[in-house]
Image 1 (cartoon, rainbow, N blue to C red):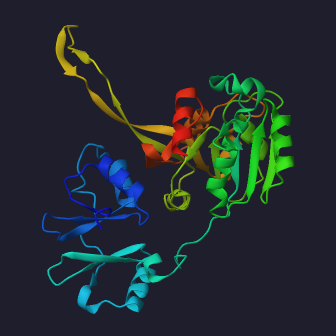
Image 2: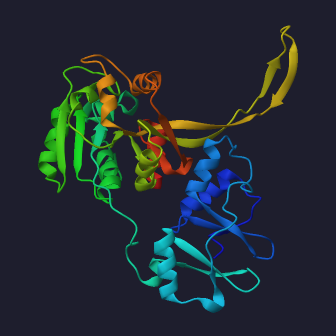
Image 3: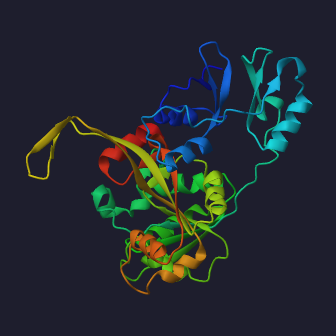
Length: 348
């Protein structure tokens, strides 16, 4: 119980980390006497972050104050299943007559292996795998970056597994640098999912080769860099994109940066206004994972060096919507440079 119970004075950042650790994807907010104050899900946190709540602020205005509950003296498994199914919940707290949390119920706790309301994704995935990977030299002098090993598998297999376990089976890889080696690897692997290659004749940036996919898809699809592993709920990400009617959704990691010096602020006369001693900044960092509507591909110019940031700006300039899906920084593993690569080996 202590893993899923928190008090309202914890920060947004602490709550994100607590949610990331629990399989229930829901926290119970209680007071000092263990009375239930509400429930907190990743969706609740996401809404708070997107309305401007800082990561250092507490969750007092973020959690649901009128959650669905089961009374201890009225509890039975069938009633619990009905409520879980009807409200599309993963977990319901059980409280006594004084509203003190005594337990909670989940689908797995009821002996159900799969939540009846949870659907699997069968969505196309595009992996941008054509870069030279200069930050990972000397490995990439010999191998294409997607084949750099992390533990006993190359990076790209870790990425693909994040999608195949949800039901995705259609993968498109953009290739350029050492593309023949990458193609030979998959020929030898003979996976039980489909892999198609999009060949760049010359480097086209982080989005230029997506132009070759115009007219190929009818539904929103994932696009990911080949040097990141995102441990997040891809189903929630896809639903977030659809529900928000976004044309592009980018996944952003909540990062905390501490400047180990006093920073000087100047006034309009150029004199010192004040000194901020070791300021801390909370930022949302683009991770390199996206959901795109197929229509936005038509904005990409043909055979031109073009980055995903150019596409996002062009989408905005067309009056279309760009969504941001925040995740905890522990959910983002960047293996594109040596320092992060070493950390990835320890975390995977």
